[in-house]
Image (cartoon, rainbow, N blue to C red):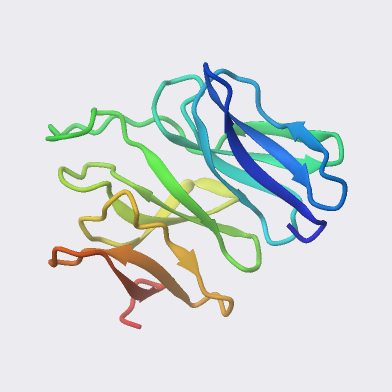
Amino acid sequence: GPDGNVVFVRYDGNAIELWLLNLATGAEQPLTANGGVNVEPRLSPDGKRLVWVSTLGTGHFNLFIGELDARGLRNAHQLLDQHHSSIDRHYYSSVDHAINPSWSPDGTTIYYVSNPEIVLGTGDIFALEVDAPQRPRRVLSEETSWCARPEVAPDGHRVLYASYHGRQFTQLWLTTTTSAPP
């Protein structure tokens, strides 16, 4: 982050927890200790918030967000309500997951992959305003894979993501944040 800290994932033999590393001092600090699977941590552009994927509470992958300061992680909470899709899925449970979070350059929007009412693939790419997470917006509808990992360009108008888009090999693709052709 901008203050010289890095958030990383550590397996402790029972759970996967998030830790903070101060690059200047080498000091490490635990951020989570919830016994769940906590992965894909992403610092906000200003380094003051953290979004990550966790199984806390439900056993299913969902987005969590919290404030980050010198004392650690504060006000951590689930960002999306748990949702059960009404369709039968071939590979996934009826509980929708949310994975691969990424921040917009201005820190107001999180892009991620989710599978509400989607049968195949890990889901579509969505965006949600951090202050209004109950209204996610679909950015791209495609049969994505676990490695989609959407990343917003510094200009805030384009999204880079990985896709096999009808081929056998994963390649990088570009779309816009408004769902229009790039």
